[in-house]
Image (tube, rainbow, N blue to C red):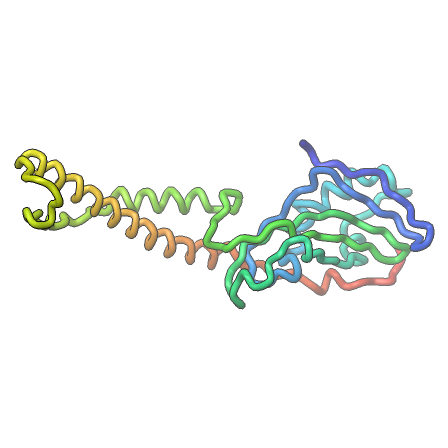
Length: 223
């Protein structure tokens, strides 16, 4: 379903117009700070503001340029919708998902409200993040190309078997099965170590964004 902007509602007391949305785009980030969304103004324009201004333009008396919109824009953060206190250590990287829920127009300023709708450990990677699929493919290639060492198979003595004597054929089958289990465990451990290294490289490359706060300050200038 496509993003839709509902007709604005006028608040007589506050003398403001409020826009609500349907199917607004979610914005995902990797962060250590859940008090606000950390994306650049350019990113916010591309993922939300551009479409919002276009779809809401029919309700404006004249076209509102995005430069004026950002100049008068204030950010509001709604974080109490998601219980996250105490679940993450200080400084730990977290995958946060924000949703724009409302834009309010006053005479000389505009407010945009973002609601925090989901938080997870950054170790739980998202397939929506840029470069994730490439990282997964790289992990698979590393696993496939890595030669696993042959594991020694301990001999099974008669004393450790809690039942009667077994045939040499059955003993061989069990030894092969034990070898496969050990190799599978080694492969899983190797994959985990490789994935952790790739994850560190990925989040160092894509995970940190800075908000240009200078453009979000309130301006009292008129059009």
